[in-house]
Structure formats: structure tokens, C-alpha cells
Amino acid sequence: MANQSAKRITQANAARLSAVTRGALAVNAVYLLVRVVLQRSSSSSSLGWGEAVLYLATAGAEALVIRNFYAMARPRHNSGGVVVDAGADLGAPGLTSYMFDYVYISWFVHLLSLATRWAWAVYLVIPGYVAYYALPYLRQFMLPSADGSAKPSATTAAAAAADDAAAKERKRQEKKDRKRQRVKYVRG
Image 1: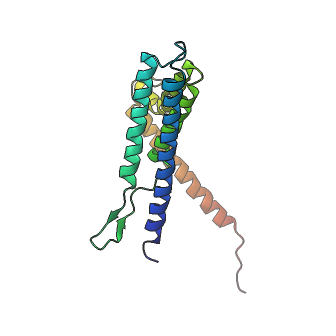
Image 2: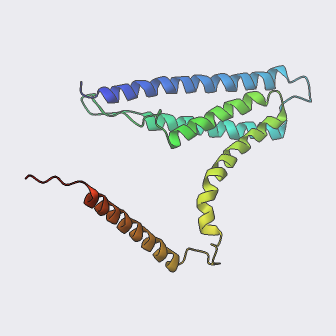
């Protein structure tokens, strides 16, 4: 029973890495086959320098991310061959899932770019997504507050603390009042 979780994570990681590797090889093979071999004769749809640079840059980044998956998921064994650390769970949410999203977006763009050169604009989804979630956090540091200062002043922080203290006191008083209003039974 010991190390069942580690074994399960190791097996799930191996399956996921196998699927990602096969997917990357298939998508890139299809892309290169269509662009280099099949479309070589027509100059309007063949692989131009700009598109070749875009492909190489994004395929390189994709390869680095997949290489990082292998490094993250590598299990560590002790001298007896027992799994000491199963490696990172590739199914976990967070940065790992964002990295998988990048790989899937790359596959989508590579395949879509076989039909149109505008497909490379889909990569703008990534910085757009980051901006959508990061701007509210950055705005509080970059934009001045209503009173004109760059950061919240000490007086507004003190006022917020005073409001919190008043709310706690009010809750405490309400609880005392409810306790006083309960019917008390006396033995007679």
C-alpha cells in the first residue's frame, strides 16, 4: 500500500508525456510535410522566411516546454529502486496546466497556419490572457488612487482597519443581544 500515490502519479505522468510527445511529433510532421514537400511547387503558399522563423521559434519554445515536462515528471529512486519522489504531477492545476495550454495552442496555430498566414495572430491570445488577469493587480500599483496619491495613504489604511474593528464589535454586540433575548427556564 505504501507509495501507491507515487506509483499512480508516475503512471499518469508517463501516459501524459507519451501522448504529448506523440502529438507534438504528429503535428510537426504534418506541418513540415505539407509546407516543405506538398506546397513547395506553389510559391504563394510555400514556407517563406518570415513564416519559417515563426515556426522555428514557436516549435522551439514548444520543444523546451515538453523537455521541461520530462524534467518535472522524472521520478527519483533510492539505491534500492524504491520511488522516493514521483516527480511533479502533470495533471495538477497552475503553471503546469498553462504550459500544456501553450503546447495545445501551438499545435492549433501550426495546423491552422497551413490554411492561412493569419493563424499566427492566434498567439496573441496568450499575452491577452495574461493582461486580462494581471492588469487588475498591476493597476492598484500603477494608477493613482482617488485622492491623487500613487499608493493608498496611511489614513485610508487606518480607516479600513477602524471599519473592520467596528464591524467585529457590532457582531459581538449582536451576539450578546441574541443571547440575552433567549428564554430562560428556571427550576421552581
